[in-house]
Length: 64
Image (cartoon, rainbow, N blue to C red; front, side, top):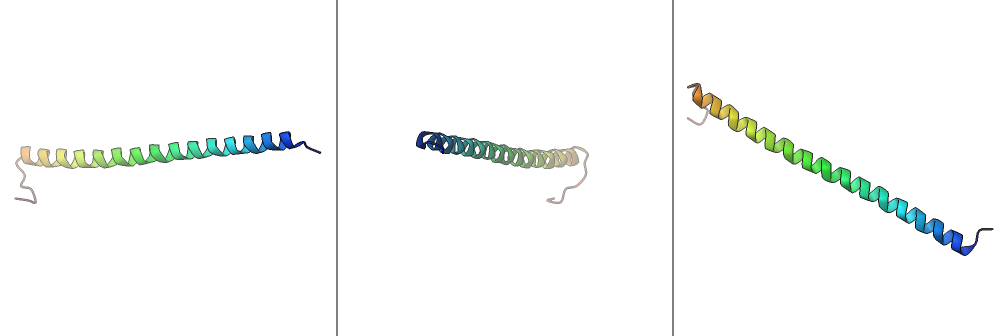
C-alpha cells in the first residue's frame, strides 16, 4: 500500500507535468500567432512593392 507522502509526491509530479505541457502548448500558440502576424506584414509589404513597381513601370493603377 502506498503511503500518503508517496501519493502526495505523485500528485505533485502529475501537476508539474501538466503545467509543463500547458506551458509548452502556450508557447506553441504564441509562436504561431507571431508567425501569422509576420505573414500579414509580408503580404502588406509585397502589395506595397507591387504598387511601387507598377508606378515605376508607368502602368496605370486601379486607384488612378
